[in-house]
Amino acid sequence: MRAIEITELGGPEVLQLCERPLPQLKTGEILIKVHAAGVNRPDVFQRQGNYPVPPGASDLPGLEVAGEIVDGDLSGSVFKKGDLVCALVQGGGYAEYCAAPLAQCLPVPQGLSALQAAALPENFFTVWSNVFERARLAPGETLLVQGGSSGIGVTAIQIAAALGHRVFATAGSDDKCRACEELGAELAINYRTEDFEEVLKAATEGRGVDVILDMVGGDYLPREIKTLADDGRLVIIALLGGAKGQLDMSQILRRRLTVTGSTLRPRPVEFKAFIAQQLQERVWPLLASGKVKPVIYKTFPLGQAAEAHALMESSAHVGKIMLTLD
Image (cartoon, rainbow, N blue to C red; front, side, top):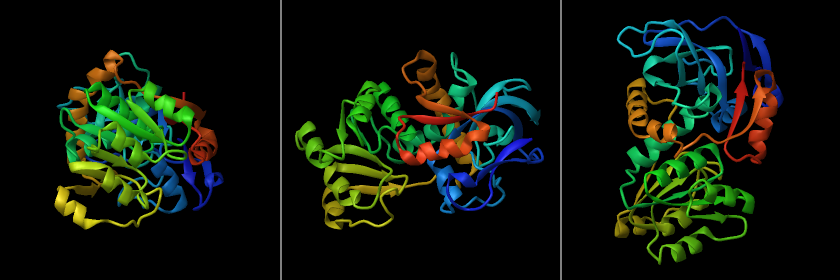
């Protein structure tokens, strides 16, 4: 099969087409003939040497795919060979065939193409597990999404807004802010020209927000603590601004704040299966009804994975960058 491998650690140019044998299936896995795969920031980190591959996972990049089931043990499953599914995987998505745990597969939502479905798993699993499971965003509570124009950001905005929450977002340009608002954010803040702490205090009449989904870290940490409402929760899922920041622990004590975080890739199949079930019950109907939609910025053929990574690193996009194999 054709695949994209990381020939050495470095820039986008180290991504090269290669020939690899088909994946050997493990217990509980199926083989998917890939129609499309998502490009995600962790793929960039892996290429740079900053995101280790979990033991036993494919060294090929790619954390989400959609395509046709062609092999594997489907006994006891609702799926059969030939079905179109999307799947969260630990690696190997940048290839013509990909092995995926059956428990991490979901049907392509009604009305969506395989390309659109491939844009779902990584972001939707991440958002649901962090915003709704870890941070437990409750009815009537407010959410701030840092980096609202990213794949994670547009997903979090849409799901939370569709479920009736007030959603705020930050983005790096006025155009990106408008895109966030069109997707359901009540207010999007240009972090280059505005102070999100001041803007949100005014927008919430001094109360602050209940949950912050943060992909920045670094010097955002003290500002986010001040932006949280009493009993608020800060969930950190990436460290684009650095791994260290100052933390005023007196505020955590006095205002009962929670600072937490997670990474999805090393979590066990059982946890991801639980999130898959939650998504199918709570979010897949929103996709089928059009209340939530995948936001795809640009697609590239598999052989242009390097160009796709260069676009990802430019941060010029709003939404998802995809690879196609059809």
